[in-house]
Amino acid sequence: MENAVEKIKVWFRFTPREGWFPQDTEGLWATKLSADTARVQNVAFLQDGVAEGDVVRFQTDADGRHWAVGRVSASGNCTIRVVPIPSGPLGRSPQAVHQRLSAFELGGEVFSEEFPMVAFNVPANADFSAIKKLLNRGKEEGWWHFEVGCGNDAWWSA
Image 1: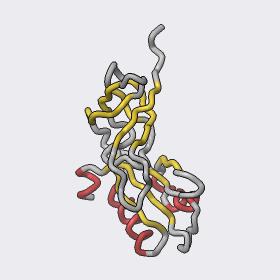
Image 2: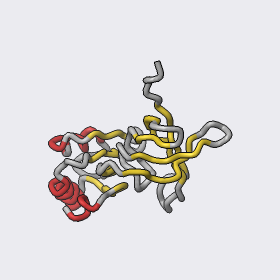
Image 3: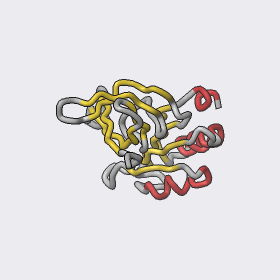
Image 4: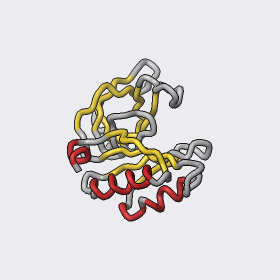
């Protein structure tokens, strides 16, 4: 039976940011939908402009690597990255970051123990306004730095 869901890694190329990680690629897990499209299944730590659930088009190179070449459709989800400030009240604890945002039931992944950045998937039906309010409060009160890796009109206007 050919109904098995095929998980693939789709790779994204980007220009490294000054003062950020030296990587210029990031691989995201995805569910293959067709010969050249897949639905992203995890949150991007480095790649901007893509969110969990988005459908991307890819090209497969001679080595069998799948390289993203564009977004086919947006899921409506957003990607938020939060880094706790070591000298702040949360210390270097990604668990404390998760706890502060737990009311919103966001899925998130931690980059590494050395760099405790948490990348959150913010679902399209989440309370964008309340999440933004808490993110800004945390920034103002020295809990964390944050950035929006992938926003949409609803996020920006909330």
